[in-house]
Amino acid sequence: MSRLAKKSIAVGKADVSVAGGTLTVKGSKGTLTKRVHPSVDIAVDATGVLITTKDRSRLGRMLIGTFASHVKNMVQGVENRYTRKLILEGVGYRVEVKGSDVVLTVGFSHTVALKIPEDVTATVEKNIIKIEGANKESVGQFAADIRRIKPPEPYLGKGIRYDDEVIRRKQGKKAV
Image (cartoon, rainbow, N blue to C red):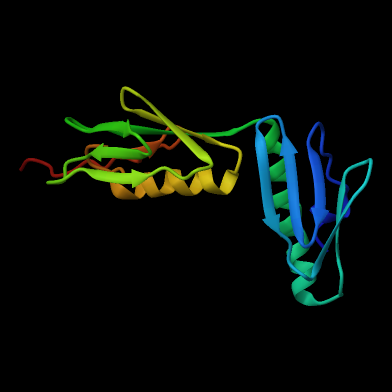
């Protein structure tokens, strides 16, 4: 059994409810919903949220730790939004937000446009992209999608990288 699921998860100021196989977490920064697997039982009481298995199957025992992490992330997301920053490095590399798209000019013969998910907001200051949202999965996935367009390369360091990412630089060719 997961050590995360043995303890009750504190909800703070968030409102957690389970109805019809759907978990709903409401807070000051938003509302998140997630479908609950039939092998997992989620009980909400005054102390917090307790996650157990309905049946003692192997799948149920594996999923309780996963759902404990999901509930914890959802509660934290509706109280304090998740933020991810990406830095664009390279001569002539630009990024801008046009409507509901992020448009990147990163050395290709064309611009690359990515649609911003509905539960995520993206802002740009110079060459720094700031992605915010209550759903940790959406924020992380959208940041990974942007980074995948032009990952940083080890020789010059050009590309799109996370703000806390360290790029190991290579030396390159030596003159004879």
